[in-house]
Length: 149
Ligand SMILES: [Zn+2]
Image 1 (cartoon, helix red, strand yellow):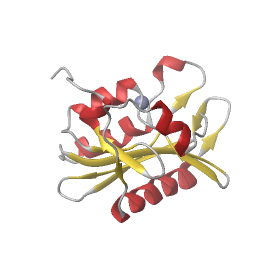
Image 2: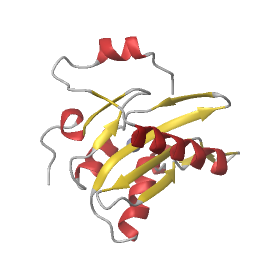
Image 3: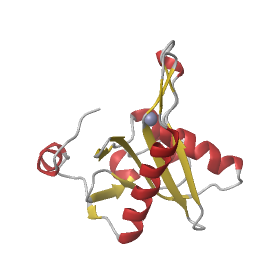
């Protein structure tokens, strides 16, 4: 995980990607994701949880998750976004409005755009806003066009 400046992000973004400034509600979702890490951060021989996610559904319900990184078996790790989505689905909700994931290390933090697997999983629950940096968001369909459904 590395922090990316907004300028570097702008250089890396595809020219066709439409980005939008985040809103006050988005900032609130970021704060909720930070809080879930500070409450649940674990680091030991077997497990590491340093990434948090928060999502808000089309009905306005908020779900949170942390990543579960199994140090004994990499491929079995669970991303924070997947963790939050599992809680949403378990609660009967099916449509994501906005989602964010981020890491925190002391006072440093940054937004993490979702990995490929998460982009696919998110695509099964609408075309939500995805917060991709501290100031920008985009639609999932710009990050992951033509998902298999
Ligand atoms: Zn992921």
